[in-house]
Image (cartoon, rainbow over all chains, first blue to last red; front, side):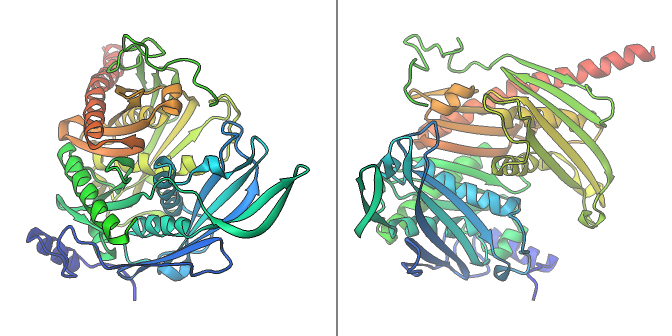
Length: 263
Length: 244
């Protein structure tokens, strides 16, 4: 079965949103049910699986040692990569990352990086020479809409679950000791995506809404109620008023999710 | 960046490059600079030097990418290897792929895509020198190139960034402010339709600062919009004189 949405469906979605409702019985600002499972992959230093309705994303975190960037010799390194695995959707194809998976990875990356979620200074082993490198790999397993939020939540949940090896430096050599410490974190950003259909703003669009919506806007927010990253996507526009309205909805939803996750 | 050697804004509120908080860099726009492209534009925005060229509407290559009900817009944002202090590999980076996508999405709302089914418009953007805010200057240039190619548009798209430097919201960040500042908010805007077609942000802003930054960026866009219209008029007035 393909996920092609017919013009009839489009009309149906638009009409019901006009009434302030949605086809799956949610209000315009409701999230689907969110489930977070942490530590699902034992061999990864950290992992989490997030179910957002039927959307399913698995994030694995690997921690290795490597060189810091020359302009930040005292900071550990974090990279985010996203794979739109072909088993997740009839529209995903194997091959090198396309613009959609690159955008997904970079939006997740920006939320974590700009909120200073990871205390990268504590990941420094030897300034300028050796630091911990945190690889965050986003694996989309089932695409039923709003991959950005599912991936961002899963990435932060996986980082919170990440254990780093204890180490000591003997004669300039790095030695791994027994035991683990948790990854040092300073913030737990929450990412909220809002879609626009016919001028109406909807939270957490699912796949059928995504195929008819004209654009989306994503806000990453931190504990202090500040905004730390934004990405507009889709081939339409927002008026400045809609943007401010969306930012208010996003901040309110983030507070709600933060309470629910206890982050 | 190791240590901040200088303050980015001095006590009088003057920035490192001598501008006030809400002042744009000097901007030079030129339309129709390349003879082979259907439309082209050159932008100097501060030290940014950017060339954009538009081809089409023309047949899509490869053909299977053509859409039966609309035109396809493709954009390629690319930085020249010599455009930044350390040589950039000419292969497209992940950043360039993302920017190509958001630039495309910032221009699409200005076009009547459904009026040109099965065709494609290609926009190529080359950053010859980068000094912060290249995506915005690229959008300003690309919109001019598309207009110069004679593709009907609902409005020109114009872009400008605002951000936060040393606890102050400022307009049009240059490279050092972008790297050392607290936040950067690029905005693309269609003034006649009051439509924001690109919005990104990195850094931390309170909701109030965010609102201020968006409004400041939109005001900047409106100023550049006048220069854009001027640039188009300049080219077409020259042609008129030749005809006479």
